[in-house]
Amino acid sequence: MRFNQLLTLMAFAFATPSQAQFDRKTLSVSGGYLYSYHFNAPEGDKPTVLLLHGFPSSLYDWRKTIPDLRAAGYGVIAPDLRAAGYGVIAPDLLGFGETSKPEAVEEYVLSKLSAHVAEILEHENLTSVVGVGHDFGAPLLSRFWNYYPQYLSKLAFLAATYRAPIPWDVEAMNNATEAAFGYPIFGYWYFMNETTAPETIIDHHESFSSLIWASVPGMWRTHVCPVGALKNWVETDQIAPKPDYLSDEEYTTHKSIFEKGGYRGPTNLYKAAQRNIDSPNDAMIPAKNVIVNKPVLYVAGGNDDIGRPELAVKAVSDGANSGMVPNAQVKIIEGSYHWIQVQKPKETFETLDAFIKEA
Ligand SMILES: *[C@@H]1O[C@H](CO)[C@@H](O)[C@H](O)[C@H]1NC(C)=O
Ligand SMILES: *[C@@H]1O[C@H](CO)[C@@H](O)[C@H](O)[C@H]1NC(C)=O
Ligand SMILES: *[C@@H]1O[C@H](CO)[C@@H](O)[C@H](O)[C@H]1NC(C)=O
Image 1 (cartoon, rainbow, N blue to C red):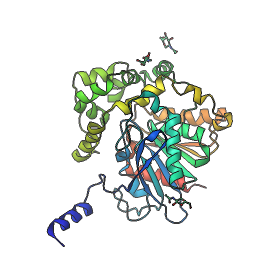
Image 2 (image 1 turned 90 degrees about the horizontal axis):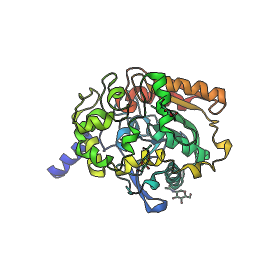
Image 3 (image 1 turned 180 degrees about the vertical axis):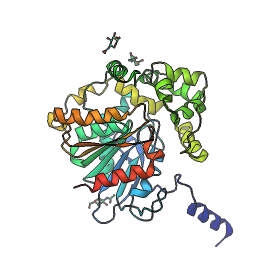
């Protein structure tokens, strides 16, 4: 063996949890878009887990979750845990990572994204999966259930809750959260809705990235959540301290994925939602598909200013009272901020594993 080949092999063997442990595949879906996704088959008849990332994220942010869930080998982050043997399917969503990035806002409606997810599952012959959605992956998982409930055996929402297919009213959401918590949670949506937001973010990328990962109590409620706060933060190039749970390499890798792909597609997710472009499609969803009659888990970070634990607790009682989500439970991960699966990978794995195993 040549010395160079040996070095390459060693580099793989000792790769830090970066892109190396993904088994990437591609599929061309309707609209002609190319999706990049990780897929590993389960061991025997164990279930397969569908992971849907949020914003600003990608398949990369499941790098600590996939090794512990997947079949074959040993967990990378929690090396005492043998990989659980589950199948895992995890796409880069439209606009993110290595998947296509159309410019038009209308392409990012959740009805279309749900159809793409269904096509990927069909292609892999997956008829039933446990769905997991983090952040904006949660409304997508909700809509995937509404449009294609046949594919989901259980649903887990991280840092967010089930959202019924009703029009988005960001002003009302802000009023309600301001009344409950003293600050409006969704003020940053108005910035996302601006046409030039993608360029503004890239022009101040270090400032934006540092805030995304900030793990300082109350930082998001001051600098992300109120109307105008996030835009002001980046335009004045403020920098938040680096969190202790992210290495410099991980921080840089995450940032470089967005430097390459930009924020046009990713912010279109918010634009499509806030402008209610999907409402005519959502209005056609059969009433029975709005009810989630499968087991539901809400996982909340105790310190998350956006996916607040109180909202998850309330979603459980509201879902039971209305009968819309009759079988939901909540797990709060203390000390965690918004990026639960990145900050608390072991707890995330153990929580999902217990949920998947529950009869
Ligand atoms: C799915 O199943 C079909 C029919 O059994 C088979 O031809 C196809 O190769 C399978 N696809 C994958 C990706 O395994
Ligand atoms: C939100 O609150 C403002 C200020 O009280 C009020 O003017 C507005 O009508 C409210 N909007 C909604 C949608 O509830
Ligand atoms: C979002 O942007 C669109 C297009 O510029 C605009 O028509 C709409 O009023 C904006 N929505 C809000 C709530 O600002």
